[in-house]
Structure formats: C-alpha cells, structure tokens
Length: 408
Image (cartoon, rainbow, N blue to C red):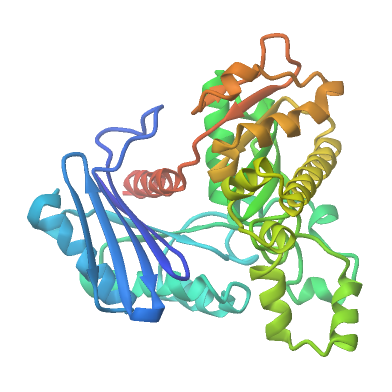
C-alpha cells in the first residue's frame, strides 16, 4: 500500500511517500520518496529538494502556486532519477497534516466536502496554516481524483484534555464561543508517546509522560493513560514556553498597556509576539538555539539571558505538568532543540535531581536518537526521540484503510 503524506506550512511543504506491505512495523519505515519545498516570496521562487533511497534532485521553479508546486512534485515520483512509481494511480491514500480541527474533530477523519467546509471555517483559528492545508487537499483532488484523503489534526491528540485544564477563567460565555485550550504539536506528541513506550518495552497506558517538543515552536504535553491531559500551547500556538521568536505566556494586561500607551496596532502586536520575541527578542541575535549557544561562548550577555529565561520557563512548566500527572515516569525530548541540544537537556534535568532524575552525561553528549539517556538508578527514564510526524500520519492512514476493509 502506497501512502502519500503532505505536511503543509505557510511557506513550506514537506511530502513523503511510504510503502506499507502487510502491517505497521514496530520500527518506523523510511519513505521511499520525500520532498521539501521552501517558498521564496521575494523572488517568486519555490526551492525544491527531492530524495529517494538512490537519488537526489535540487531545483527551483518559478511559481508560488501550491497546486502547481504539488503537481510538479508528483511528477518527480514518476520520472527522472527520482522515479519510484510508474503512474500516480499507484498511490492508494493521501494523508494531510491539518493544524486546527477545533472541537469538531477528536481523531483523524476521511475528507469529505463537509470536512473541507469545516476546515475552511476553522481557518480563523489557524489563518497561517489551515488555508495552506486546504490548498493541498484541493490540489490532490484535481490531480489524483477520487483517491481517499485523510485529515490528521494537530489538535486532535489534545481533544480529551479535562475541562479544568482546557477552559479559561474568563466569562462563561467563552465556552460556547469555542474559546478554550486546544493545544498543538499533537501529532508529534502522540508519536513520541507511543515511541517511548516501544523503546521502554512498556504499556503506554501505564506511563506518566512529559513530552518536550522543542523546536522553533515549543510545547509540552502531559500524557497519562495514553492521553494528553494538559499542554502548554493554548487557544493559539503563542501560549506557554518561550520559543524561537514567540514570546510564550505573558501577562495579558501588558497587551492592554501597550495598546493604550504605545498606540500599537493589532498587526504590530501580532508581529512582536510571534516574530520578534522569544530567543530572538531577548538575545537580539537569532531564534536559533545553536547561534545563541555560540554567542554565549563568546561572552554575549544578552544571549546568556535569553538562554537562562528559556531554561527557567521550561523547568517551570515541566513542574506544573508533574503536578497534573501526580508523578513522572518518562521525560522525553524531541524536535530540533530537544533532539540536538545536550546542554538544554542537561540543564533541564539537573533541576529535577530531587525527584531522582539522573542522566548519563556521556550518552547525553553523543547525539542520542531514540535512546534512554538516564542512568540505570534514575527514578525517571529520560528519552531523546526523533519525532516523525509524517510517519504518524501514514499510520493514521493505514488505520483508516484497515477499518474500511473490515467494514466491507
């Protein structure tokens, strides 16, 4: 069975083609074809990189149209050095990462016109992403016709969060208006929780897990009985942890102050909070943790302050998640910073030494991938997991395929 996965961002597109033969294996499969696209708006170019097991293609095409870009990508599957199939009709199912499913979708769904209409309506909650996701869905309809498409929602994994954690302490009327904690990075959190249980050889339902998704965007998920019971991102991805260029949680009264005293427009506030804050805003250097650490080694005090705030906020929210879980069995680090910054992992874990969290510093500094870096006597297992959202989406598609087979 060939499964095409489309993971669309506001200015990017990741695509993978997986081939699953009999059943989902214990170890994630590598895609037989994968592509990455970065859109350069200033010169109306799409930079494309396509890879297979035996070939690599890099090129630029002069278009900003997502349907045109996707059509070009699909052609690379069937021709040239990156050919992996003879014709597009060999694709059995297509899975899409859709950022926001609101309260309507608590699991992945087969895409129908009603689903498309709902995703479009929910675009007000994810204006930078849901429209891009819709473009991919419609482009597949135009090119591949009636091939089944599955929407896998980033919010779905958090849909069972209890009301006490999901409902804000504002007016009660907000609840009926859909204003609540939705959470994001759900596909990554779900994958890492399942992968952690596999690595440890334990039942997922028996583990209390905190998954730290630390990339340019950052969020924690507290996972109990295999379900997310709390997460740091909220109504939008802006809440919670300090991030690359996002502020994370701040006093809402500050926004009122800025509007009154500085005459900021809504657009200016949006840009400040999402694009000019976080590591970038405090350091004045970069949103990239690698550059922050390099600047610290050169004695840059603002870079040091940015790093210290980042670690402080991370420890703070992990502590809150431990209270929600009423204990901790597994601490997971994933995504760009979580997987690659040994210093971040060490500085976070040392704060929880009083809970018996103890890591092997040698393991921690040797680029661990899907590895437990805790020492044997540690009371908490500490895992570094390479998150694979695309593979999780492919697994969701396989599950839908099997359920439909069983119905027939």
